[in-house]
Image 1 (tube, rainbow, N blue to C red):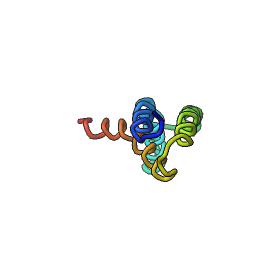
Image 2 (image 1 turned 60 degrees about the horizontal axis):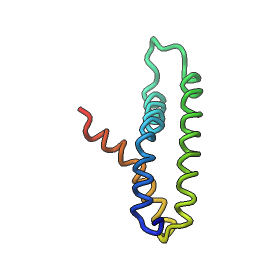
Image 3 (image 1 turned 30 degrees about the vertical axis):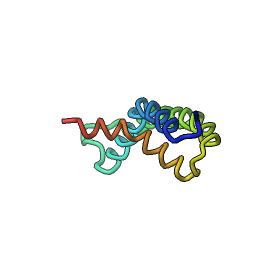
Length: 101
């Protein structure tokens, strides 16, 4: 069952649903660093980093724990497998961006 690409795609689509949170947190961090914090916000980004780093690291560990065994069993080339995995993970976030008003 893990020899074909649909297994990797479905697993990463399912992983993409909770990935919305770390992706949004990374986007928020990047957008805040580019535009700068509002003048009335004096707290800085240290508190946000305390929140963002554990969430992103835990999700990254979960993602790699699921994908490494699947990649070893897959007949896809490594480059194709990891590209498919990344695109499958980003698909739910992309869908939310497209359908948002």
